[in-house]
Length: 264
Image (cartoon, rainbow, N blue to C red; front, side, top):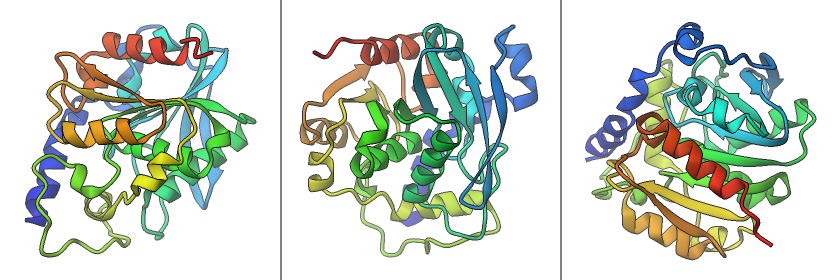
């Protein structure tokens, strides 16, 4: 049963397989050029990042077993009035990893240290799937670092996965030679945010899901939106779990509608 659960998540993330390799991005994305790119030394790894545009900071965090190139078709629109930061989470894309097991809390700390390295105190955060879970972790433990949180296709607990059945056993959360095995173990064991954790979030939050998300339960998404104080629920039309890839223009519009909205 654990294998079936992990398979459902993996299949929902298969759209990341259509993401072009990083060296193909320029060809696919036109003339947009990053202001800065490189590696940040954080928590014993080298975290690959790029920065585009100028204005208020906007951090985009990709889903599991993909990389920052998933955002390539949104960056031009988002960077028109924002400083957009994208990075590859540890062990994925161009970023390295250590023998320390990958957890959401550890990846959250990687991104906070990236912001520290860049001299950014606060940023709006857009997180897809695992990126949304990382965003929730930061909002719970370090709310002072976020101005807004757009969390799409994320779960607060493993049973937020669609058609969840409690498995008889789960893979151990430890270091694996294959990072895919390690991420599968992560999905089986985490996240474990309680209702109290979600209710403690003070960052303005929008909880988002595609109208036919293949991986995350709508009921669970509604629970998150109802539990996070003041959060709004947005259903993206005609997209599934991989909404940033399926409808990049619509996704960018939804992001800007939220992060640029006057909440006073």
